[in-house]
Image 1 (spheres, one colour):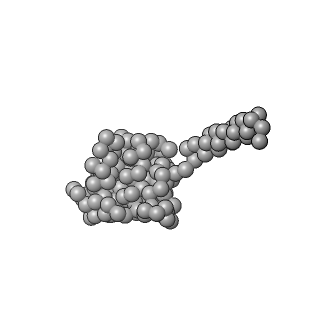
Image 2: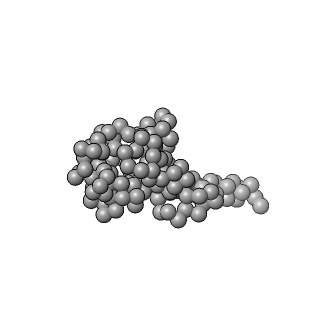
Image 3: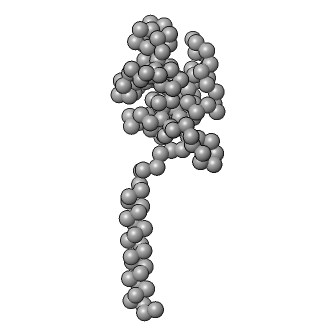
Length: 147
């Protein structure tokens, strides 16, 4: 094969690789499912597609817990309920205002430890292998961004 053709083939291959790299950058969510990639919980490492949905699935914002109707006994923290009556933006604002997330040491975040039953006024909501815990932890580990 002539040297010129080999150089052209290599250039085209590198160009294709670069194009695929740019096209795929940032498009893969963080897998918070069990080892092996079988992520059937539907959560990703974002707030809107992970932590918010997981907290809503747990019904943390139910009338008896972290709802606007029950603010006095929950320190004012409103969380998503199963009907998703609080928007993702409002839930993020609530969590940020209450300072219940610690990105430096994610596992010590109050949002996680309260759900584990550590000092939680209600009862234990999850353990550290639960999909909700994993989704919230993955979001905090990713920087607790409003995404």
